[in-house]
Amino acid sequence: MRQGITGVVKHLLIINVLMLIGTMAIGNGEIFYRWFALYFPKNPMFQPWQVLTHMFMHGGVTHVLFNMFTLWMFGTAVEQAFGWKKFLTFYLLSGFGAAIIQVAFLYFQYNTGLTTLIESGISLTDIVNVLSEGKYNTAWVSILGDNFNGFVSAFNSTMVGASGAIMGVLVAFGMLFPESKLMLIFLPIPIKAKYFIPVIIALDLFSGITGQSIFSPSNTAYMAHVGGALTGFILMYFWKKNEKDKYRWN
Image (cartoon, rainbow, N blue to C red; front, side, top):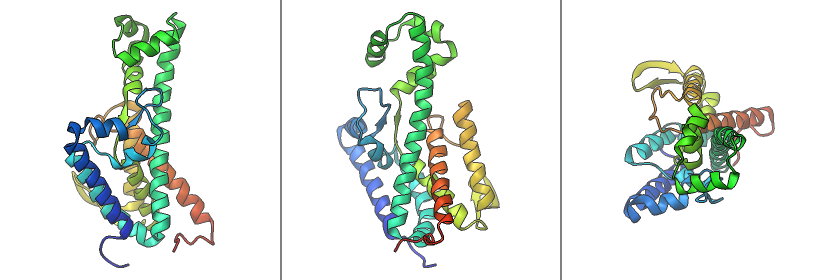
């Protein structure tokens, strides 16, 4: 396997860095986030293209550096195995899968609260108006109880980052190179990829369900990570079953 960065990985790195520079340089970041971050579909700020553009947006220098380092570290080997066309397809589909799972999780939180409020006698129109204006009635807190924060945060959520697509790439790496040894920064013990990557996914799933952060910031879209990993696994499973595929598209 040749050394050095591959074509698609290089261009993805460049695009992500340029998007961050644009975010920081124009309108103090607000304009780019308003256009390109992925908003909850019920939010008036949502636009269809955000399903794609959010993959190239990041929350800051540390965020983009960590994601791009991970993409370079694992994506190069996967692209070499796949070929550039298949790798790009895999990357984008993993990102779309991540967005779908995250939005589905948000819909669950949103619909749970919405149903409770409607059953309490509040009209759908009033609920939507209050959410859009951000002027929440204190009565909502008593009606929704523990579901209040999830309901409101789901409606106001935004998602940025390449993490979901990269989680798919990690799964592909683990399935292509299961014996490769990897290490966590805070746990410098070599672990084979076939064990390391499932543990990372399990921790994200735990954090997504419980809200308890293990090693990622508390505002991480954990279910997007799980969605990207799941999409990557499904793609790898079916591509591996297809003997004519042989993983690579030239």
